[in-house]
Figure 1: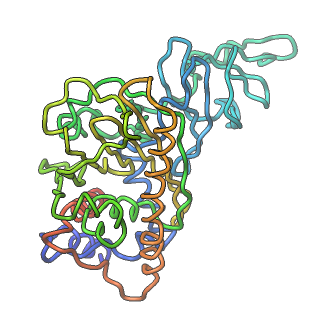
Figure 2: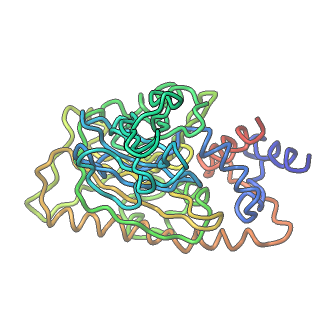
Length: 376
């Protein structure tokens, strides 16, 4: 009852609301229960499709306690399977690889196609007998995880209970409809290992309130007063974030990145940054975009996987190196903040904190979204 009361306090109007209690960041048992509702029960970000560029490419991944296999099948479709053999539950693929033939279990050599079909069961009926009437191969294909690719991010719904992706995220998809065009991965992804619960990275990303103190370089030209809140007003409230009216393109004096085609004039100097609940952070600009997948490693540790994209495959490599270094520097500036908040969750009696009604709306939206799902 105490936790339900605390969740109800999170969902109050922002002027009266409290943040999520300490246990949702610092207690492994509470975080584990939350994982089932939030990361297994919703459309969570797993990876990006550019990580498996060619048919047969496969990458094993652990996400929220589940062993998964991301692959591109022979027809070019991106799929996600549970990375376990249907025979005895052996892990099928231990390292990233190109699957040339079938996915072969290293234990008893049961084999699966890249669409998950069980295609070979050596000696299953005894030595030299590769079939058995008592074993129906058609019912023993790999367990496919519900997945959807949007803006190159591979979203998964592990328990299969979420509404269709296009329904759950309709508002965000509509908001960035102008950018519904090819994205070209720059091959310069990087990962930050951060000592905090994944939710703190979302909460920090949502708002612009911290810019003057944490990002003085950005704030020098894109000031706090140049920013606006993005708050999904729908009943599901599946995203929130911030936008800026001042975006300065990176240039070496003569060269810039090509723009996305057909954009409206608002994007000449604007940029937006969305948290797609629960664990994907996205940014879009007239000439490039990025996606950050927050991978929960432990209740108090997160891997932030950052991927950068351009409007065309032809972009200046030196400029792209500078752009990657710029964004890495910005994201690294946030590390001490989220790690400090994680340590702060060890303070006895901390009640989740309060929100600035004027400045913390996007962050409160995320807290309320989490509380609503946990309360349900």
